[in-house]
Amino acid sequence: MKRCKWCNLNNPKYIEYHDKEWGKANHNDKYLYEMLILECFQAGLSWECILNKRDNFRNAYDNFDINKVSLYDENKINELLNNKDIIRNKLKIKASINNTIIFKTIVNQYGSFYNYLKMFTNNRIIYELDKTTNELSDDISKDLKKRGMKFVGSTTIYSYLQAIGVIYSHDRECFLYKNNNLNI
Image (cartoon, rainbow, N blue to C red; front, top):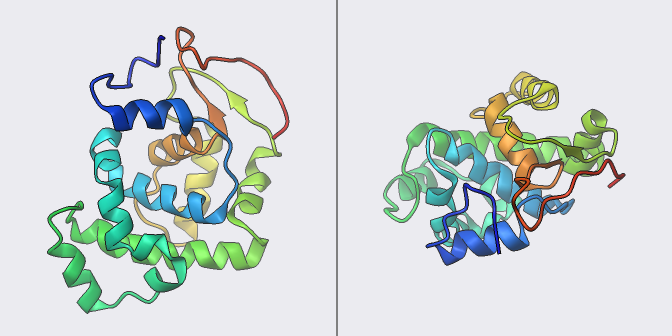
């Protein structure tokens, strides 16, 4: 079975992620939140690195309980900085807490994070290949930055939108490839 060229076939976690999760529409706020935090940690690193540490992040971040993470203090920041099982970047850790508070505000304002995203997507899946940014990721990135989020550049947001199924980018050779313009 052929998969996207980026999928490391020697990593069972990566194969499972590719086959069962990446590019599949998921509108659940808990999932959207977890993926946004993980994508922000990925900035400058490989997704495979983050994926391999995903369970460790879940443990360190109270299973991505948005209410708990939004209350993290300096003691928790120091605990995360000393956790060798996650990415110990102080700027990213602080940004993850800041971004959590902003994510929560967006959910309260729009009813869900997906409702916020729909303002930009018109409830459509975008089918495209071989890009790392587009006008959609530019617009969402700009808005999230305006709201105060960090590590949400257009490339990070594009990758996030691919992960959550807003942008569908499986390679033409991949068994999951399809090219449609369907409502989601």
